[in-house]
Length: 113
Image (tube, rainbow, N blue to C red; front, side):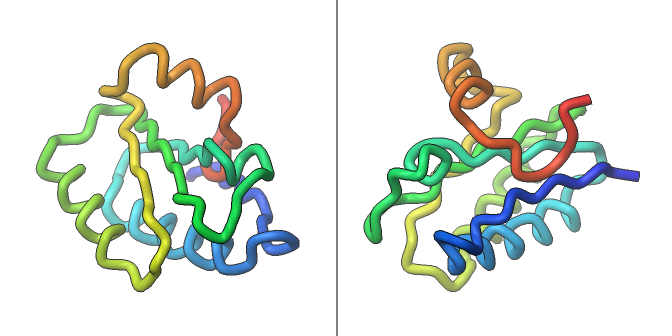
């Protein structure tokens, strides 16, 4: 069973909280192994504006096939939102980006174990 963490952004970003829940539903449906979802960038630092994009990073215990990643990205892109979503797959990301996400990002789903 997965250990869930969902940071509550309702107090400041209620529409983002709703969007995050929709994204997590997609990930739970499409990913069979344990995973972590991080939010980073302006929403993680509390400096987001109305025009800020949503930066998300996915990390999975087992590498996902590229076809699964494309499917997930397509489903996320099809969500009804005007906000741009930048979606990064940490398993294949450059080391410097991994460090930034782990240092400045907020784990919103999964477990640090």
